[in-house]
Image (cartoon, rainbow, N blue to C red):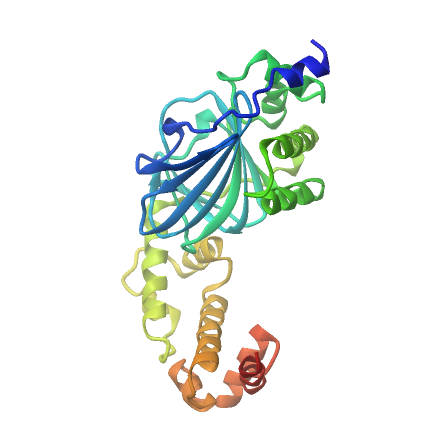
Length: 330
């Protein structure tokens, strides 16, 4: 088959809507040539843009702002999935109450034998994409198109050993610009454009090496729940400086384990996280209230205004009074 005849056989009006791929509360809200828009019914917003690239290959953009826990459809699909997250992070829960987190700018490839049971977003927001290759739905046209660029999905699976575990790594430099261009093109470009970028992405995926893999760290669901519960308690009264050990009193977790899991979920140590949380709260008050800097400092647990000013500068690069002046001038 010639390259010209392959392109003639690709249907540009393919619509990527697969109800069995999404959460049971997902709803199709609009459809246009090559793209379906799906809304997740949740406590917030969850929007997916599903672009049909080739028969059997879909590119799905995900934008979530919610705290819900979603079920992953458990049908045994013969798929290979490439995931990347531009913002936020995702918590995946597997059978046996094992949990791990995929962070911003991490990249992973997974097969059907390692699909999570549930997923959620620790920061209550997440933006990313998923390239789904449904091998049972791929046509000869699709396989021929991939072969033109020496892309063989079976070889890719074998090279990355996705039958046994997820392939996870920091996004390779060769792929960074591809992801940036994909995110920038969402809602602006057609399937024809995304087809080119997906081929480029898959080409670079064939160059990945096993030795660049990062081992996924799993934690027990019980410990995850303790960390989330303690974090909530830590944020309840920002005017008090309570030692971490006091929050952990009576909890079935060691301080070291708590700190390790906390950083895995939220990206910072408990101390650093609380400091950034307080300073972001201070920034809101500086912008939106007329309270004095001393009053704001006291409301956030700082009895010493100089210490508060230093902490604010550590986070925002300017002193509180200069930040307020700059914001008022906008």
